[in-house]
Length: 105
Image (cartoon, rainbow, N blue to C red; front, side):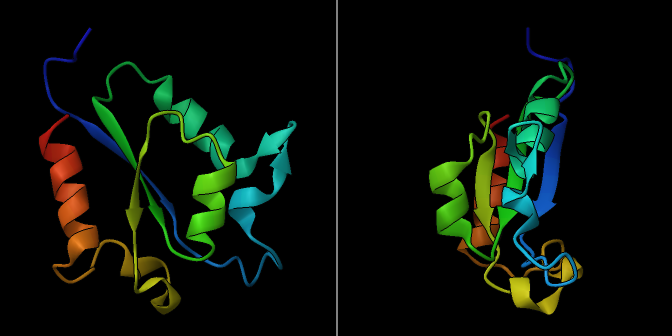
């Protein structure tokens, strides 16, 4: 059932995990990658019309190995700039993809 309001979820996962020492998105948690666990939790929220996930560092590897549970991947080319790069991205195909994703929830 579609929620009465279009509410989109967003998982910020574009970073390299430098302080963590490895790609956090791929770190094992309960037998699956940490990012997959977060996306499964978001997919289980009935009030979310859609979910997006920002990807930057190791994006191709993540898309190839992680079950995104229906989340739309959003490439953040400026991921090296840090956590704030995702929401402040200049108008690019990445940002346009998020606008497209949320407008079609």
